[in-house]
Image 1 (cartoon, rainbow, N blue to C red):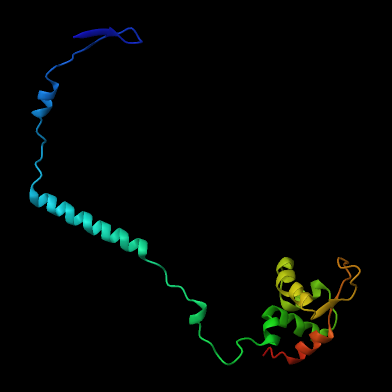
Image 2: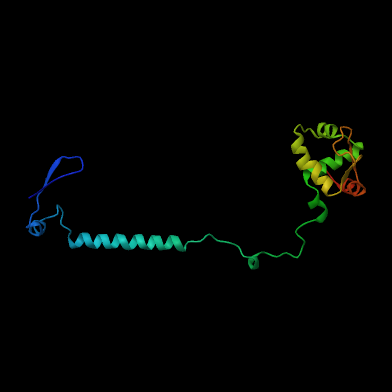
Length: 162
């Protein structure tokens, strides 16, 4: 028996047994594995491995460029693809009335949100050169109006908004 004191000053006793190996040799687990149990465990392990391997090989189907369906007709019409529905409505409104302020355009189109109007209607039409500002030197002027360009007039004439 060995005696000692720990850091807190409490005494403790440690018993060393020379026969420790003999004690461990006598240990009996509470269950006994039978060959049938081992066979079932092996089968389950194999199935788990197969499932895991199958999941890692599983890929989502993807189309490749070479597999695309090709048509002899063009897929897009360059005139109508440039004119979205909002831009077409804007061109039609300006075509019937002449130059208008943003507030008047929004009222005629039935819109209330200015940011949406600028993003979906005004900027695309300006970028495509379908409309222009009446006073380009003062783009933020409260008196600023917008009118159709010659290109915008051609597009507006060809629109059928019925």
